[in-house]
Image 1 (tube, rainbow, N blue to C red):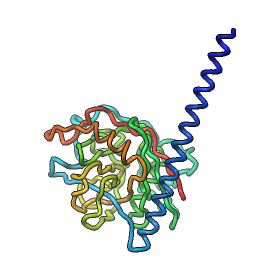
Image 2 (cartoon, rainbow, N blue to C red):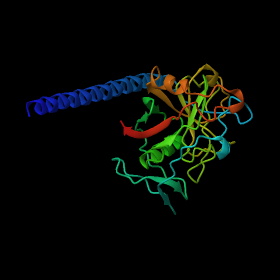
Image 3 (tube, rainbow, N blue to C red):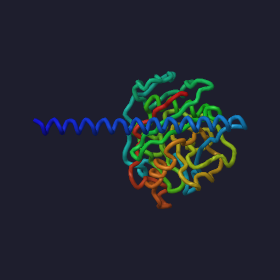
Image 4 (cartoon, helix red, strand yellow):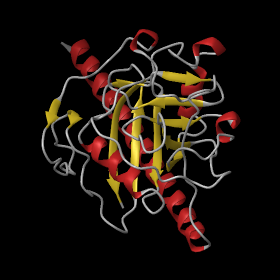
Length: 273
């Protein structure tokens, strides 16, 4: 009995330590996000913040959204409801039932003047994004709405090209999946892409849906300004983003499909500041 009691005490102590460690990481991430927001506020004062985006369907270093399912990653997560008619704004408290298909694009569900962030938890760690609703309100509204509908949860990033991009946001993992609607471009100026930029993948002008990509290297930062920029990684740029990039497929003929190992988005959690 004494041994069992000591074992339980050790286990309880370990669980407390795990909780404390996770709490510390969450606090650290929040501080980093706040620090980025302060910087962005200063930049806005002198003419706007950094934005992010895209791909070239004819280039081997491409974030083309028309890859066929027979060349894409195997894992899919298409279980969820279909919303017909008008799309209601989702609950903001995380209680919304998952939805994977929509008959209509969502209305404006974000608050004007608010700052939105996202914490993306993957099987390679977490990274945080500061979303730019000032320069890309349609894309941010879309991303926030889909995330609150848990659209991205349990999906895989089906394409990863070393030093270029990791592409995610397709529940079918085929490279051709979308939420059932598209929305207009909000294009940046040339030279605005940087490592850690978050952008919409597309298959041509004004074909944005749910697929997005993370610029993971200098090659990605050289993309032409043909894709909507809507966020910047604020935490995880030196940890999670390199871990995602390390799983990229180096074969030029493969065009990044599939990654060398599965890259899964476990959840995307939105915060309004």
